[in-house]
Amino acid sequence: MVCRVKSAIFPVAGLGTRFLPVTKSIPKEMISLVDRPLIQHAVEEALAAGIERIVFVTAPGKVTLEAHFQASPELENTLAARGNGAALEVLRATTLPRGAVACVSQPRPLGLGHAVLCARELAGDGPVAVLLPDDVIEAATPCIGQMVEAHAECGGTVLATMRLPRTQISSYGVIDPSDTPAGAEDGRLVAVRGLVEKPAAQDAPSDLAVIGRYILAPSIFGHLARQRPGAGGEIQLTDAIASAAAGGEPVFGFCFEGRRFDCGSRVGFVEATVAFAMQRPEMRDRLGTFLRHEMARLETTVLAAE
Ligand code: UTP
Image (cartoon, rainbow, N blue to C red):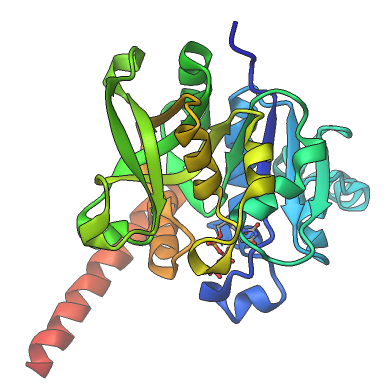
């Protein structure tokens, strides 16, 4: 029987250089889409999938992240005294039960694989989910929940994948699909025989890119411990998963249903902000009007310049 996924690792110890200068003092994961930080989107996704234990891998000094999920009695009392029930409800929803959250520090940013390895002692014995908060996925069933369901059928390691144009593929880990059919899950599972981190477009083994949701078999930690630095001089999670696949362990790509925003890039972050804001009934009309005016203004300016 396949073991249920109970723990999730959130590697959030990166430097966030693409978001400097804001990331000088604010962790990237605390930047907010409208009013909810990226990390909250990811944690809520994991909780909705039945994950019970949250492990943050943080850089030394990133205390705001833990604080976000702790109770804040003073603020709660103030809001209660003012009768601001709506704000109180929003605030309380961010508090996670004691014992549900654990933190470990990655002393230096040696790569995503190294960050995951840092969580080894806290992750428990079973399969573990990994969520990168800068991939925000909008879906009827949360992406990691879809993957937990798929994993219950196929076991092994399951990687969220999406098809991308060759022009974009070199920024991702790319799947080398096996000829063997992967089985159930309505054709959304692809058996993986290999993986390549950030291949040149012409060398990419497919157009199936791995994005920031994983369910990893416990053997991953052994593979990570043996990894040497790969692309960019970092210990790559992709390389460790490739070692598992090369050793005959079952690895699957999973084509999830949903819309993914690349919030690790500035333009992707702005796209996500607009998309999430447009879903708020109290913002939709005004923002829609603003966007239409802004487009018209831009076109007039561009035309005038030509
Ligand atoms: P990125 O590749 O997006 O790197 O990391 P980054 O440092 O966050 O951002 P840029 O590229 O400098 O702008 C993907 C995920 O892996 C984590 C990051 O925090 C992010 O969630 N990560 C990366 C670590 O936890 N440790 C690392 O050493 C590297």
